[in-house]
Length: 263
Image (cartoon, rainbow, N blue to C red; front, side, top):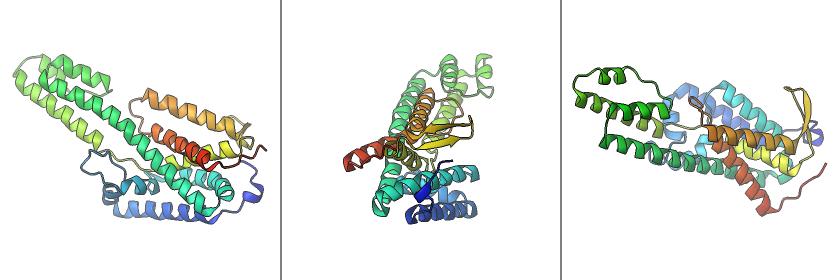
C-alpha cells in the first residue's frame, strides 16, 4: 500500500471507468459468448475482427480474478494520475494507452502468425510425418496418436490429409482467439506513476519491503519483456499489450511535457 494523502478520494473518471468495467463484466456473464464474439479484440485477419474491438476489449475481462486486480490497480494508480492530469486529459491518456496496447499486441501477433502461416504452407507442399512431428514440437502441441498411426503404415496420403486439417484447425483457432482486459491501459497508468512520481514509495506484500515507484515500474517492464520473448506454452497473458500500454504512456507524457514530482 502507498500513502495516498490528498489523492485518497476516488476521482470521477476512475470511478466511472470502474463502474463501466463491472457492468460489462456482469453483462458478459449474463449474455455469454455473444458479447465476447462482438466486442473482444480479435486478430485483424480473423473473420471475427471488428474495428470497434480496439476500444471495447479494454472494458472486458476473462474472470473475477482478472477484473479484481485490474480494477484495484485502476483505483490505486489511476487516482494518482487523474489528480495530476485532470479528468479530461486522464481519460484521453487511459484510452490511448489501451489503444497502444492493442496495436502492439496485434503487431506481435502479425509477426507470429506470418511465421505460422508460412510453416503451414510449407507443410502442405511436403506433408511428411517428420515435418508434422517437428511442427507440433516447435509449438508445444500434443499429438493425439496421428504420428504413431502414420509411422506404422497404411494410407500415407490419408494421414497427410489429416495432418493438414489438424494444422489448419490450429491456425484458425489461433487467429480467432480473443483478447480482453484493461491491463494495457492499467500498465500505462503504472508507468505514469513511475514517471511522474518516481520516488513515491509502495510497500510490497511479498517480499515485505518498500520500493520506489520508478524501480517497481522498471521491474514490471523487465518481467513483461522477458515473459513476452520467452512465449511459454500455455501462457495466455498478452505481455506485449502491457508493454504497449507503457510505451504509449511514455510517448504521451513526453509529448505533453508533463512535469515530474521528485518526492
